[in-house]
Image 1 (cartoon, rainbow, N blue to C red):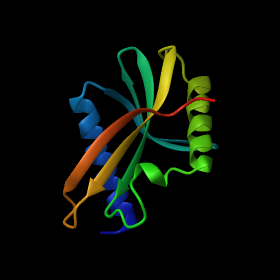
Image 2: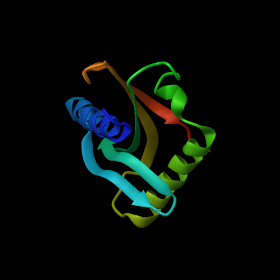
Image 3: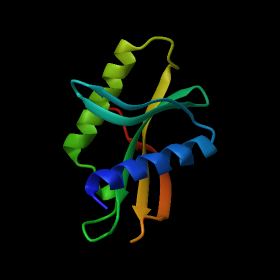
Length: 121
C-alpha cells in the first residue's frame, strides 16, 4: 500500500466515521493558497475543519504526533481563508483531528476523533 493510497483510505474511513457521529460533510479536500484541509463539516451549529492523519505503523509515532507546528499554522490559515471566502457559515468553529491506524492488511485498528486538536491562536 503506497503512502497516497493509505491517505485516501484513511480519509474515506474518517468521512464515514464522522457521518456516523452526526457530522454533515460540506466539502472534502478543500485547497487554497495557504494549504489544504481534508474535511470541512458541520455539527451542532459549529463549523468543523478536520485533519485526517493515517498511519500503518507506530514506528515513527502515532498519527497525532505527526502534526508539526508548521502544519498547525497551515491548518489555521486554511480555516481562516475558508471562513473569509464562504458565506452563511456557523459563527463558531474548530479544528479537529481524526487519527486512523491501519493494520497490515489495511483494516482499521483505531479511529479516534480529537475535538479542538488545533486551537486557534
